[in-house]
Structures are given as C-alpha cells and as structure tokens.
Length: 483
Image (cartoon, rainbow, N blue to C red; front, side, top):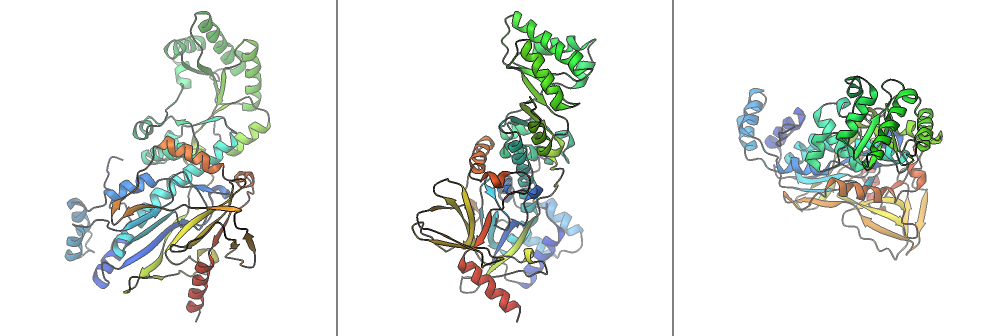
C-alpha cells in the first residue's frame, strides 16, 4: 500500500499496444478515451462517483523507475528502443472528470482522457481499477444509509475486505457514500475521517463475569460507553448488567454522554424492543441501541418496517465487499482521434449488444434540474463545444427510442456542467476536498434525486439523453459502418 508509483499496475496488453504504437504510429497522435459504466450497481437508480483523489495521485506519480524497466526487459517481449523511451515517460495530457460524491448514471463519462495515444492507453487499467472499486463501495454505502433513514451507519468491514487496499480505500468510499465513520484506524489516519468502535465478545469472556467486564470498560471509556450485551444472554444478563453499570455511573456523578448497548446476534427487532423498554424503565431513555450482524440495506429496511428500536448501525461484510454486486462494470473506450487539421475525428465501437455501442466524439455532460423543486430531470451528454441557454426551450429524447420526447419550457429548468478539468497539459489543476467535505457534498447530491429514484427496489431510472448534434453524429457513423 505504501508504493506511490503504480505505473506497472496495468494489464500487459496496455504495454504491448504501447510498443505497437511506438513502432507504427505517431507517438504524439492525440486521442480521447471515456471511462463510463453501463448499469447501476445493485440494480439501483444511481451510483456515486468516488476514487478521483487516488486517480490524481496515480497520474502525478506516473513514471517508470529503473527496476520497472529491468523487469519489463526480463520478459523478453519489449525492444531496447521502446524501453529507452519509457525512461522519460510522463503524462502530458488532459483529464476531465466528475467530482467525487456526485450522483452519476450509466453511459455518461466519469473520466475523460485527452492525451497522446501511448499515454492514454497506459492509464486505462489503473483508472478503471481505482474508480470502479471506490464508486462501487460509495454506491453501496449510499443505499445502506438511505435504508437507515437518518440513523448513523458505521463501516467496520476491514477484516472481511479483500485485502488492505480494499479495506482502507473501501472505508474511504463508504464514508463518502454516507457512513459517519469507520473502524479502520489506518483509513482514519490517512483521510482524517472519524474512527469508532466498542469491544468484542472476547473482552467479556476474559473477565470473571459480564458485570466486571462492563464495569472495567465503563471506567476506562465513560464518554463512549457502548456495551456488547449478547455474549451470554441478552435480556437476562447483558442488558441488566449494562443497566447496573449505567446506574453506578450516574450515582457516582459520571456524565453519561454517548452510551448504550450493542446487539450482535439474535432477533434484532425483538431484542431491541425489549431492551428499549428495559432501558427506559430504568431511566435511560437516551441510551443508544446499536446493532451489527451481517446487515445490509434490505435487512435494515426490514427491521425498520418491524418497528425496531435500533438507531445506530454497524455494517461490515455486505458493505465493504458490496456482497450482492461485487463489481462496478466500468469500461474505457476510444471516442475520438485528432486529425492533421487539429480537429477530433469521432470514433464509435459497434457490437451485437446494443448497450455496448459507444457514444463518439469529445463530450461533456450537463445536468438538468427542475427549477421549482431542484430535483434532477435528466442528464444530457453533448459535444464539448455545445452551448445552451436556459431561457430557451430544450428538447430531450431517448437515444435508444428517439420518438420518446420531452420539451422543457424555457425558464423551467437549470443546467450545470458536471465534468471538471483535473489535469491540463500534464499539470494538475484540481484540489481534492477532504473526505468529510465530499461526504457532505454527496448528501446534497442525493437530495437532488426524486424519492422514486432512491428506492431500493425497482427504482425510477433517470434519463441520460444525447444532444441532437451528438445523436446525429452517432447515427452518421453507424450508417457509414453499415455500408
């Protein structure tokens, strides 16, 4: 994890193609690649963009060290002149991207790379690796937090994550998506996010009895005293012993700040209701009832529907691995090549699968909001030089079924271009916000979604439309390819 230079974090064919370009093409031929995804994770209504800060770090550190050159030489497939070229390799192109925490939708470019072809080709794998993973976990976290209906959700899946990187950067993404903190101390150190935790069953079991374990823990951490009550018997032992300790703290004049119990097994709805009644009758109506135990958004929603008294959630395995949808599905496709006249020639990829046909050209994205409600009406992918006037009417149509049309009256909508310049001529021109600031922005972004789009099952799909100019370009290329 401490290796900042991730230049060899790539698929071999990126390097073999680079050597092919080096031998057979103009090294400075400028191209455009788009990174996008085709379907929302978990069959949801949206996704959350995440991972841009790590992408920036990767590009800044992009260079081949001598040990990298030596290793590539040992493979026996790269020629000396190409390896010599790699010694001075740097990224000199432009990158545009949607900022982290932004709500995004299928088929729109999350990252756009404009660079000499060899550079644009090399960065494909790492860009997809970084953006795919963190966007997946941020999206899963947004779903879990939505199900929690405003309750605090903690991420603590480190021990179940697929390795240290996935655990640490996944925790970062989970906080962006809405979690209030993580159990991952390294993530807390690296990204200045809250770290939280209580104790394990082993703490209880290491003492002669449950009461002594609770009492000792309370003496050490009186201002953050959440006691795990299910080691032996939740209602007959755990909760009564916790209440006994809380009473002793109150009688001793120790302020009861953040305190309560944690449930980690059994029927969480039933146990939380019984525990709430016991705590309230003992005079501890402000005691927290937190819960863990293989939670996900659907179980949390079900528990809410059952009237659970849980108000704090610890979510581990299902969140950090996005267990029901373990991949984001982002792809990286060529969209244009610069001609000798300095203008981009749009390129399109055909496929037997309609969803795999790409959108050509140098593009940007405008988000269209309903002016009255502030909610998202649609996203519009257009060519980068197109300009719109909010005072004029705007025609939207489904690019797959263009006869389906909507005309927005002038003055009834607002526009926001959501792609931002990140690198220009190889120099970074963007400063990543702190993770907690991204989290706050992400909450604002999700509030621009209609409730129908946020629901967990069968959500309403936000339309991602093409401008007339881009649509005509795409149809022209399709017609040419068919001749």
